[in-house]
Length: 287
Image (cartoon, rainbow, N blue to C red; front, side, top):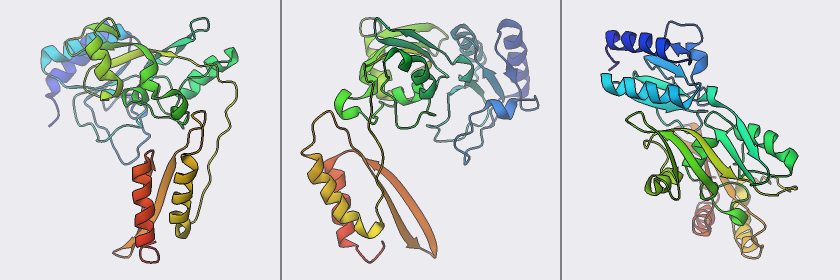
């Protein structure tokens, strides 16, 4: 159920007067364009969109919404969205994009609306690299909150383990900075806990002196999956930690006269072995 119109109108007017961030209602130009559109299957319909320009504006929005009993949801690049938002307030972080590089400390302060491409553009001229995911279009914050298992994870580990600090707005509208010494439990939970702990406005991450990366993908036909998977498992046991590898399974099933494509990324030997065995068991049946 959408929030009462009078409360939303009152909040919209208050935010317009108190913040510098664009405040959009469904009838306003730019409302649809402001919402993340990566997942085209989801159609977000918040009562109000705030395109955040600062942590202070996010904090004020949360504080005002909490006083009125209105739900607030953060929206980044949209890659991690699992459900459409109906009603309430959407705090869109695209207006917070930006990177501040400290080449001597090998760190970067990354604002919440930034993609990995923007980070790489800012830091690679200094001979440094972030622990990005496989897509440069993914938002930095959402990726890190989910843990961040990327293409070089076997060498450097989870990207979330190389976060120095996180600036966020909590449910009471307070701007906090969480790190290993300040708010350590919150810092631990944020790095892998995904959503629900606050609205992250920026992160500070480690950078690494990676000047060259040799990478790519190999594709095989479905009938060869079992052989490929067993070969990949054997090869993976011999490679050094300087080499990372992952495997995606694309298997076509015929059911009710419809082709269904299932895609899944695997990083564990146990899951890969299970898939390989399943492919052998069902070879010629559903492949």
